[in-house]
Image (tube, rainbow, N blue to C red; front, side):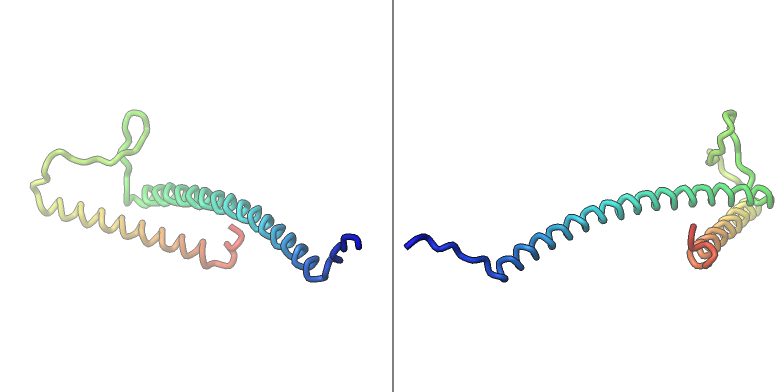
Length: 127
């Protein structure tokens, strides 16, 4: 007698088709993950830009309110001034420290409020 060819059973066809479908889905997930990763990177950059812009705006508000006047160098950059001398008058030093602490607290409160406004306010969900 001749060679008998095995008739494909439904189980073999289904498993091959299922394997192909699972592989296709894995490929789709991989592409989707790349899109998500790119979106996350874009959103992180956008968030950092918003934070930087918010800091600059808050600095300008502080200057307008007379709470902070930046020291500018000859190139127009503001920089931190660290004195290389001691302030001997403790009363003056206390006032300076209190003023700095108060300005820092107001800045921190403004940042917290801005964060709350951006994260909680339903009007800002699309931002």
